[in-house]
Length: 391
Image (cartoon, rainbow, N blue to C red; front, side):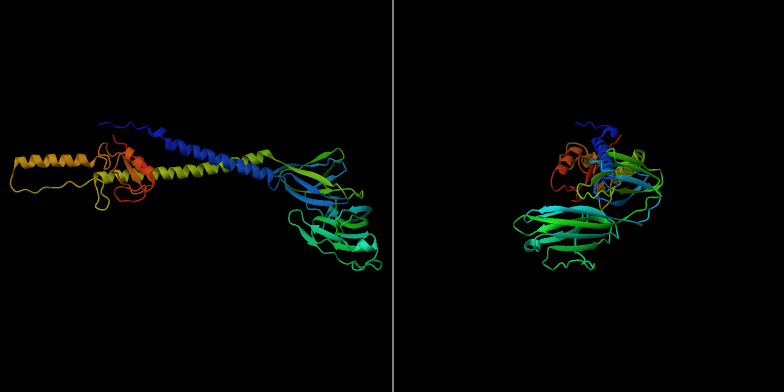
């Protein structure tokens, strides 16, 4: 009778698959965490500021080594570093007036970063016949946008928004630090030429207690963060009246050794968890092997693996009967060790979770390839097939 060659226990394909699965899981988590740390909260960002603007940012020096500001236009953006949060106590005022051409059915304006407590006042002038076809709009937010309504100015020489005169005014009070877009909407089918005047009272942070600073007059600057204190960084712009093109790039350069340590710890913890789960799976398989071996030696009434040996009662002595009984018992015992499907190879495997040992490994694999995957003894669903190694 042909006996299939069993592979060594240490080189089973299942072990190789489990090892590769653990390695791929660790690599996947490593990549995901690396990308989230690189492009997540402490990542590069593009900001729109404006003249006399002051923006506060908070950076943990545990994860950030230094902050870098890039200003391609070299307008003189300044970067200040603080140990403690500075006060929003300084106030400055600036104005700008210019001609503006608003195309038909379009919008034109500019963006500013304003802190809480700032005020902005706009006045636009055009011919009386087309003045009512110009509408002012103010939008708050960098990611989630919200349209704000103007507050009617209380100055005695101000013009009412509803009067069809040569000029109109609108005033806004800033209630939250954020980016604000101010613009005019043209509802006329023709282009409109208007004169726009903007007056801004801007609240700025007090810079006298800054630990260090750098300027972007050369195009970019770096501000080193002292480990392990949490740092506050303030980006400010000069008062030059330019309301167009205040775009800068801020990069939080990571402290690589901290990221590597955290990622390494995460991967080690995940590897230990996977190893523990694999060990539990191996222990469970060992227990099933022992259970199947015990059932093969002492079958129970509910889950019989081998039929019980029948005892024949006779009266008197008869040599022929004894010989026939011995032969019958030997044949029954031999048949009980054969596969119940092919009756060719011996039973050398068992099913998980029922634990029945009824087939050879080849027939068990054919059962696993089927759709139902049912045990031929108890008709339970088979999850795995385990080999039995006997000496």
